[in-house]
Length: 275
View: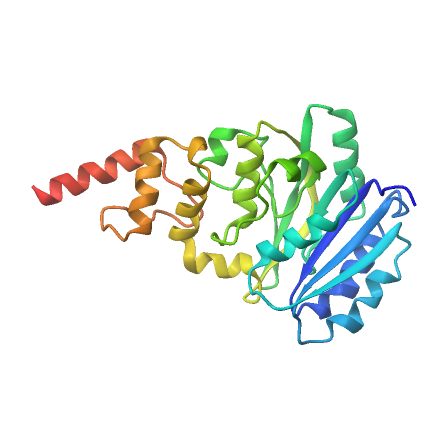
């Protein structure tokens, strides 16, 4: 069999209940799945994930495989295991509870076909939490914005070379997707945004995106220290201070890495307090 055009990786831990819904969403994709392989990577689930995976295996795919790993508790290594097995020239990582709309894959694939200079394609998305849904319009890619906040959605279709140039998803930050997008920017890859919400991303207490809120400051600092060349020296100084518990290093709003000017203001306040 020739290599598939697209590999979809689904990392999973005790999310078996969502796999049939994801299968239904993928079955409804415009253009079909005949050039798509799907790799389920299970992080030692203890629920009915093995049984529910049958819904994914039954899809009309170019190929299906499942990796049943011992539980590690970090999504980074789980995703990396799937990427290492992927055969497609394009790769997409979807969580089991994501809800790609019917035009999601076609929109991303078309964007990459039309933009040879682009290596990642992403769309706006719908944030779903506590029974409420709101569309999240994202900006066109801007490295200056990415230094401050994660301006990309939880999922994007990437060219294989983006993965090959990276160190993979790191386990030392709860914002592992943000860290991965920064790696892509550092490596000079182009980003293509497709306007309009094309998939739903639920937020609930069981997922890692929700848990990341509890460890916000250190998760942000790790991104800075992981990708030092992408950030000004003063921001790296702030990140070091966060990691070493220095009182002047204000963690700031959730999901926001301070700019150099904000860090300077923190240091000035600290000097005033000491004086």
